[in-house]
Amino acid sequence: MSNYILIIGACGQIGTELTLALREKHGNDHVIASDIREGGESLMNSGPFEILDATDYAAIEDIVMHYEISEVYLMAAMLSATAEKFPMRAWNLNMNSLFNILNLAKEKKIEKVFWPSSIAVFGPNTPKENTPQNTIMEPSTVYGISKQSGERWCEYYFNKFNVDVRSIRYPGLISWKTMPGGGTTDYAVEIYHKALSEGSYTCFLKEDTALPMMFMDDAIQATLQIMEADIGNVKVRSSYNLAAMSFTPKQMAKSIQAHIPTFKISYQPDFRQVIADSWPSSIDDSLAKKDWEWQSRFDLEKTTKEMLENLSS
Ligand code: AKB
Image 1 (cartoon, helix red, strand yellow):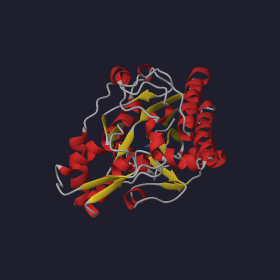
Image 2 (cartoon, rainbow, N blue to C red):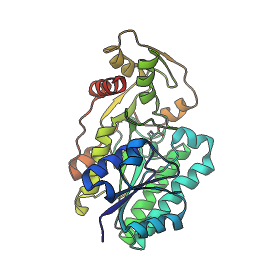
Image 3 (cartoon, rainbow, N blue to C red):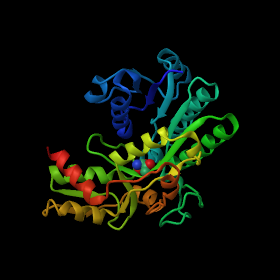
């Protein structure tokens, strides 16, 4: 088999940075970016790009055959806040795209799959603090239900058909290179942009809503690490808990005020508060640490410094 990589959903928040990181590692021509729409310049100009609908099995198969793809990263998904508005569209995209890739792997047309899960797999009855890998999971959002179902299908395809599918439950992700879209944790990126452009931010979550978060460099590092791990070390075949930091909007505002003392925050909780209230406050990721030596590098202070420095330069 060749070592060509396909990223589906390459223009999104994670997809963009993941594509650039994989191109740096494997060479630009070995990493095929694809999405339903074109993306930013750095992505479009650095290597091959294909317009691709993640729900179209035949179109994906064509690209897989054409480029002799061996590894697929399926990053296309509808996130939590948008999925509440369009439940059927979210289910269709989030589930059918996954089946397309799992079935290609089952038919031995590709060798390895990465599929992202989320802290959204947990629900209001899950223990909130230091949420364990295995615990009550009763997601109460459309997005969470699709991710929880996806996890079960990944494990099933691994057990039944030997499909090498690997997955991480991402927390909220913070990046200065790309904006998130349609998530409940998006405030943690918007706040930096507004702090710099307007000196104030109105947060759609309450001041004391603690959520698990991660700087994008850590998320990309974890993704590369789990995909490079020896097959025998990837023992969880649903999805791994992953953690770096947990904080509230109030704590985040304080960390920004350490750099911009005049920054002001106000709170106007909306429908996303209910989603956030159903998710854990912090995550126990000891299995990822044990199985493939995961270790985060960015805490809130370091993240704030990186975000403000890069967004203002
Ligand atoms: C969202 O807020 O929907 C995502 C997630 C936590 O998966 N960022």
